[in-house]
Length: 264
Ligand code: 13P
Image (cartoon, rainbow, N blue to C red; front, side, top):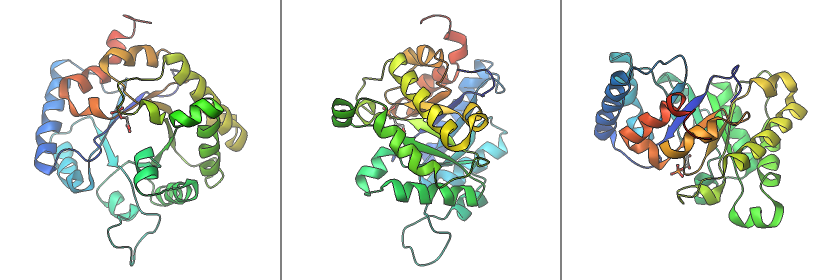
């Protein structure tokens, strides 16, 4: 983790917690971090609830001045019009979302989202001043055939070509085989691919953009492995799925600087 990039711990709730459950969860997380005397300037925390929870989460965060950013798990590539079931970046911005996840492997698989769609969605996010968290990652089969970095680098290149060097974006490296499997990439594996992705950013958008861009790791991140991941120079944070739904586990992940010296 390079010191010039503020670490980002992002909780992707996926299709979990309804709007009432989201209120209880965010309240408890706020209390847990307050009790632990968490200092918000050291680590940025962002929550990604389902669309139907966003208004509740926004209202609670504002009312209690909680130190959390939030965003959506997807957006439409279009801004408005006849696109039944889609959600515009305009609406997300109106709810004060800061971020939006694009190209998650579950959307690529469940909704046949290809790199062109992910690029168009990333552009839509930028159009509405939302920071896209662009997800890339290889399947177990890709890993076997091509090694770890080839597919993520190709996926990212397609998105970067559609964006501008001045655009603000985050990249999340999420090996598909590590998601929900309980088997995270090793810190060295995660760092090697993050370094290759940073090199790709440098080639397409220049070294300044590459140095400033946060690259997250996602896939079976837990309190027990976050510290060793965060010690690697090119890993700037985590996109956490299952463990972001457990208040004490997620609050422990957020507080990784407290245990970063305990393991390697
Ligand atoms: P898990 O942390 O449950 O493996 O999920 C990772 C993920 O897909 C986050 O977007």
